[in-house]
Image (cartoon, rainbow, N blue to C red):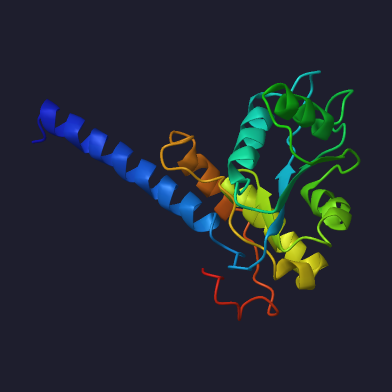
Length: 204
């Protein structure tokens, strides 16, 4: 018969196991569809999230911070590209994120893409800002960023060769939610384009 202490230990063990599984799955998602493109110029593309108010919500604030920490201080040029139209409120998500970024000290090159209304459009409308850079980072929650990268592979496989890792994944960040995010992400599987599967930076 299981004792009360035994049940507690089993419950704690289950929580730890699920949490570590969530970390592992999100870590893996953050490393899909990326390579090790060389170069000294980069674009950091931040995907927007539905924003009903007139200030950046919690998710969009976090995505901006993840974008800012993805900026390579050693790059000769690094541009922040913020994506998202007015999908849930009166103001484009990209504009709200830009205001948050500049209010919190960002002074580098910044582009606002205020028309897109889906992840597919986030990527499609950001393409003009990616043509001239050596390296491309797409930032959001790991599974969402993975989907954004997969869309770039489909839309512009030539530019997808420039994809490198952003800094959206951190161990312990969003830890209680990561198992749920992993389940949601696995429920919307991303297929691997044949044109991309040969890349050494791609891992399942």
